[in-house]
Length: 426
Image (cartoon, rainbow, N blue to C red):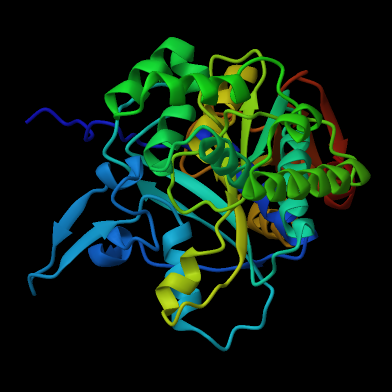
């Protein structure tokens, strides 16, 4: 049998997993700097949870790409396609949570959709959400976290921002009542252009007059100021005011990468206000690397009783972030070890050195076997280990070790304490 992975999934070798862990650690630090706490939810959800109109809804592209399965009790289940629905279900089941509830979560999600660079069928996401407040400051924190994280990863990027209320107002003003269908088409404006969107809208049953009025409001150099002059719908004006408040906050927070994009709608049906997407600049990765928004109706819908529980959040796409990092740098490190200990006829004595290095917090590996010095050095080099500690009878007599820099080849005779001091500085 020919061994191969399923289509749209892949193994993550050590050199990539090391970088991935660094990305996750970076994001964890950013989330916790902003006061978010960790949460973990199941990969498998009841299908009715994923299908609920308070969740993704029938019209969502994500739901069409959901992997479905049935357990031995004939219950219909699905693999989560994102974290937001699971979070909403969790909050609905735990009504004693103190609000606002700020949480982040990492893990794999699954979509049975098209495959391209940056898009896979199993991929990691990490989300950060604030539940229980309608303040635009919570939305601003989401944007600021995106900016902080991507600057730490040394990306060149832009953050596109819009508000669903503005789009709803524009559609109302154009006489379009079935807004969910129209929003799906508008969201594709950057991808398929005016003609493509017009064709889709006609296929969805909208007339030329409605389409023309819509394009009058969303095409060209649309700004919040220009919309304030042309948009008279009450819901649209409310969205403009929210967006103005949001931009005033992120300006004070030092975010420089955010721009207003009137065509941004995002595919999920549950967004009710702010919508956000981040894109790399001048990159082969054309899909968004993060996105999110405000979804004030979803969690209350799970709870029943017409409750309104405001919520806003963002999601990072780990797969496209990893693809971007692989384009930026050569991945040569295949182990987290920083030091490789090579004993020469001094194995038992070297074990004390190994543990001393490890106790000092230095990731340390040791030669396991009887390979010669050159083979061991070649092994350490192949794994990208930056330092080798050579320890034999000569060094034992001097109570020192030989520290070899694998990049330069320079060797220095040092005590173990001196090695620890030098490497912990790095």
